[in-house]
Image (cartoon, rainbow, N blue to C red; front, side, top):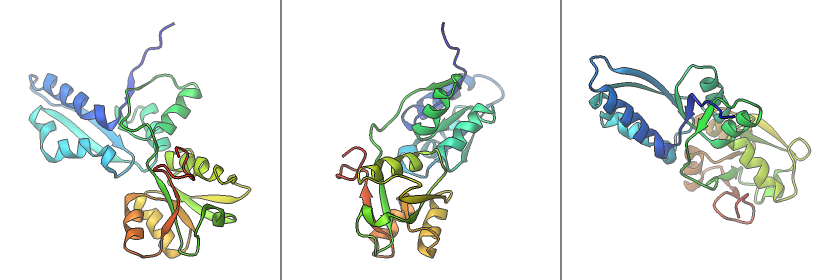
Amino acid sequence: MKTRFRKKILSPLFVSIILLALGFATSRAEAAEKLVGLYSARVMSQSMPWIAQEAGLFQKYNLDFDLVFIASSGMATAAILGGDVEVTLTGGVGIVRAFVQGNTDLAFIGGVKNVMTQSIVAKPEIKKPEDLKGKKIGVSRIGGNTHYFTIQALRRSGMEPGRDFTFIQAGGDPEALAALVSGAIDAARDPPLVHGEARTGDRPVHAGDGRGSKNSPHG
């Protein structure tokens, strides 16, 4: 039996192409088509719609497009399942989890990465993943990509959530950075702002890596 897909989950690679195609089609109509899209991270892999918006391409092709930020793949998936938005750029974890749980009225069009290019950063006294035992680790939301990545990365060091460390839902990138610097959490998956702070020699340091190290789920 065929599943009828209506709502679409789009990767950054495809979203601009599809939105521009919609815009081209509606450019012949008198009124612009209204479309709301979400993105869940302020990162380069989700930058294509920003570029299209800043370049005026949506307006050029008569597409009335609102780009909205929600800092979690789980929350973005919930929004599209609830009918609040038509398309979303987000991590795959929330989408796959929803599909497995029976929400098959989704179309996962594609992705731009086949690994999770992330790291974990922590306070200076934390030198290795094992030092995170008994610590609080910030993630965007439970069930999102940052949550999944951290679990898989620290399992490489024999650690399990609940038993060896505690998750704190910190929100978006600025909130994670603020919580890390203030001491409310001991470590976080490295959003761009946190990673930049680490490079300047401030508080955070790398504790695990998603770019191919032995501590990575993809190493």
